[in-house]
Amino acid sequence: MAQHLNGVAPGSTATLTKPALELKDIDASYGTTAVLRKVSLKVEPAAVTALIGPNGAGKTTSLRVASGLMKPTGGTVLLDGEDITSTGPARRAKRGMCHVPEGRGIYRNLTVKENLLMQANELSAQESIELATSVFPRLGERLSQKAGTLSGGEQQMLALSAAYVASPRLVLVDEPSLGLAPIIVDVVFEFLETLRDKGVALLLVDQYALRTLSIADQAYVLRRGEVVYGGDAKTLLEGNMFEQYIGEAS
Image (tube, rainbow, N blue to C red; front, side, top):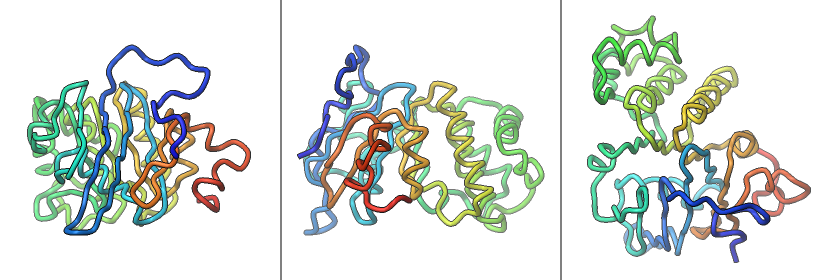
């Protein structure tokens, strides 16, 4: 039985605004294998929501359903309170949703500059480049370089820059620190906090669960495709709550 599934911690006052994103009773399968079972979660406007759990729990699948890359077999996806379950990724992107997938979703055969221009929404070429390089200065030194030849950290910076130059209202981020050196992980989390401070809503999946919880407002824990906790992120850092739901610190 999940705790606090209304997304509001005990003793707090429920928000009167509609969630930026809501998954309601989502079922999802790969073939005959059920991956998500009645998953419900909310991402509030201008807040960070952490989605954590062991490998294979269904975190990536949840993000794919939310962004429209995968159709659920049951349940509803709501964006700003409107049912978008049947709409595709392109329409969701036009409405302000940005999905940064695991594995650095970049155009490897294009230059850094060309990638930035592909990511831009209504910005001019110069504006998109200036925005991206203001948060990731190293990209400014690599504008003419093919994206596929960048280091792993630089490729992740380029992938994350989409969450800046596209001016989204909602960003889904899947494992942004995977395979990165600690110093680059610091850069990644600083960037995520920058997005939060700009009023962007975030749904964040990352291997560093403790660090993710430290910047999150709300958290959901998935286990075997089901939500087993939903509520205040900081509560999971108290006492033995983290070990109870997640296991050893990560």
